[in-house]
Amino acid sequence: MEGRELIKFFSADLFIPKLKAKSKADSLDEFAQLFARTRVIRKKDIVLELLKQREKLGSTGIGKGVAIPHGRTTAALEVKIAFGKSEKGLDFNALDKKSVHLIFVVIAPPQDENNRYLPILGKLVEILNESSNRKKLLKAESFEEFIQVFKEAE
Image (cartoon, rainbow, N blue to C red; front, side):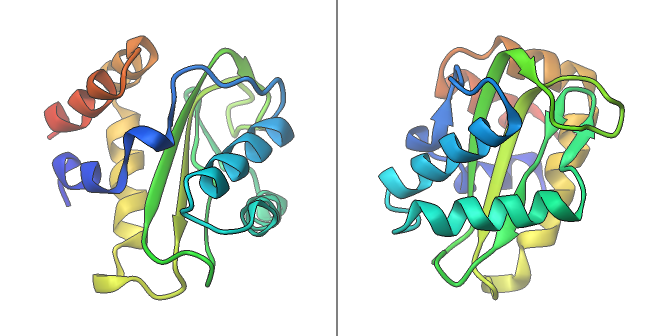
């Protein structure tokens, strides 16, 4: 999977250039509201509970200022990725103990076409491991600038 292929899982209505959240719990709630408001999922509580349960298994704060909360639910019809940026940074209990600024929330159905869920997570991690990509994402103010990072990440 290439960076370009990830683009189809993003959408402008799932892009938050400035998260309001001041904590990890608030950010999960903000994303759950977003998924419900954009009708990716009908009920906010389904997504919120899914994300909370995933965090109980271990923090999705992977380090380097990045978190990738994710999960599968029968409430999802297709794989979708929401993105939010926290200027101040949030304590996500990340592996490296650093604040998280870039949050990607991946929601998928229990069975997705071509079983792309894990390759999507893997490609996200690969792209976000590059410090130049993280720097560009921190500077991105618009959805177009955000998407450009993934177009260039090969």
